[in-house]
Amino acid sequence: SGIGTEEARSPSSNQPLRPEPETLVFLHGYSGNCTLWLNLVWYLPKSWRIILLELPGHGESSFVPKEDYSVFGFPDILNEFIEGLCLKNFHLVGISLGAGYCYSYASKYILKSMILMCPPGTDLYPNGVTTEYLRKLDRGENLVLPLTVEGFREMMRTVLFDASMVWWLPHWIARGALDMRIPCYPNFRKIQDDLVDERRHVERNLSLYRTKMEKICCGVFLLWGKEDKIFDFSGAEICRRLLKNAFVQVETLSNCGHVIPLEKPKLCAALMQKYLSKHKQ
Image (cartoon, rainbow, N blue to C red):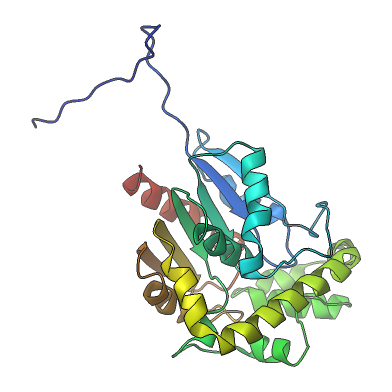
């Protein structure tokens, strides 16, 4: 074929050097935790280095109320974590708010690529679609902070396309999951306040935020469920337009809601592997 291959070797050894493993840092969404990714990670190559970051104020992570947890207020907080692990050559994977944090990081710092699942904010731009969830949020109602088991079930029906798992979920499991979340609600409400303030600022300063998005120049793989009831999947094309200096690939998934790693873990893992295999740097 005329194509040759070479082995990388260290200067002091005849042993071939192992290729550097792909390093992926995962960021979950608002009010979630890092266990969201476990089904997906099971299908990823065992040679990859997987880092599941728990966002501040979520799960067992610490929380500093005076910090700014808006999308574009977060990059420096995330960078402290990245530098603490001495990461130099890595990919970011984020869903929902975590995806927003990924693209805010990429607007300021260098990374290999991003895999974004249903990122926030696209409804504010021309042709953006506002969902019922966002309309309620603007009125001060947050569906993902339930206080009752029925409210918890309603949240799950909203974030998932296939809500059948909600019906068979025993009451005591739903109650236990809810009881684990409620202690974090003061943190979530502070983060929500930061995000709502930012949304209002974006509405008044769209050109400023377009400029931030135009600073992103890495590869971007966008995944979006077509039945997403949190952020409408039409946002994928808006993201493509906003990321005008990035290398963007879009994949929309049928019969899938907002929480892609729960509903389509195997498919999601396969698409991620295919994308990264074509975009090795």
